[in-house]
Image 1 (cartoon, rainbow, N blue to C red):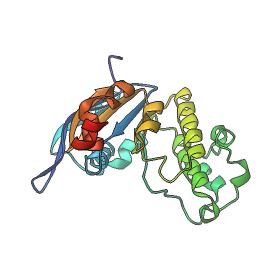
Image 2 (image 1 turned 135 degrees about the vertical axis):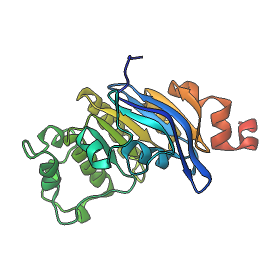
Image 3 (image 1 turned 90 degrees about the vertical axis):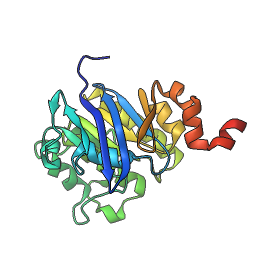
Amino acid sequence: MSAQPVLEARGLSRHFHGVIAVDAVDLRLEQGTVHGLIGPNGAGKTTLFNLLTGLVRPTRGRVLLEGRDITAWSPDRRARSGLGRVFQRTQLFATLPVREHLRLVDPRTGGQAWIEPFGLGPWLDRLPATLPHGVARKVELASALAASGQVLLLDEPAAGLTEEERQDLGRLLRLALTQGRTLLVVEHDLEWVVDLADRLTVLDFGKVIAQGPPREVAASPAVRLAYLGEEEAEQA
């Protein structure tokens, strides 16, 4: 484990009108790794993402980026400092073709480094409404990577993709690591994220209930209970 993680949450908590959405979460993202974040619906995953990216301010705790305390920073300042995010629903500009999406975030090269690996060549002059869902997801991811952010948070990037597209997405995310990126990935597909991630954190009711090597974490009784329910976990 490196002495200084690239992104860190320390005792991060958020209360909404007496409801504890995120409860004293500690999280460390090591440089050049994929860190998976899983949990049942309502576990606090999206709130944690919002806390890390500055869309929501914590009730308690701190967020550090490369050792700097960014807890009070705005989302824009965090993004300019290398902390990016891809949302669960694809968000592209309706009037901009694929080529212009890449130029918008990378005016110098137009995202050339990502066009061939992502297979975007045939789609460069197409508008988002004409793209298949899997291609639109690639455009959004390629744009986020072309923006040169060091840390990228992805909220269910495999949602709505076919099995073949999921496997291809995993390949592209691992490719991003070779370009110096660090990824935090929220995903409901446990098998997919276990195969992808270097480390896995599980939330349930806002608390971290397990953290460590993906296959060990996925096999733990606490995680099986959170995902399968008590009766199913006992019978599995």
